[in-house]
Length: 214
Image (tube, rainbow, N blue to C red; front, side, top):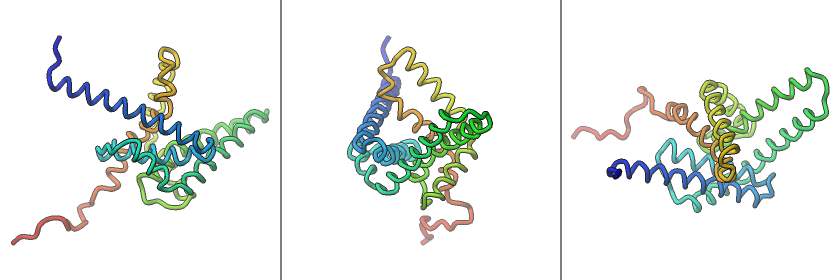
């Protein structure tokens, strides 16, 4: 069976997008390891969120390696601090879950872990896609975006979990190639309508770009 031109174009676009996701995942892993994990995960996650925002929301696909490396250095101190802060909070919660025996304290730490995962999932997208500044404001914005799009967040998290479980069961080799980029892609897709609406001009704004009548 021969492919039509439209089908071939769609297949080529799909394969090109898959390769770009794999390359982004490898770059994320490389930058994270370059920063020894604690100092690298923040810049890597920021660069990943920045590239995905350009791609998903604006349809831009600049050169992947050069753009990712530039973005990883764009907000280096802030992204390093945010990554280290999230990892530190996760370590504290992990130690508590391993050491505590009271059910209410364990329940509180499970709740804190869920909130931390929500913040960690959205905060780098906030840094990459908005003008929000300051650690507390960025964390608050990430929490608000995650809770404000809770139905999309739940669906996106479920889709990522199912896909990664399927890869772990049937295609383990794909986990190191797509394991980190899939959650970031889900966040970019969740935030696309929200950020598009937030950045769209309102009816009250003057149409400054419209040509004046001659």
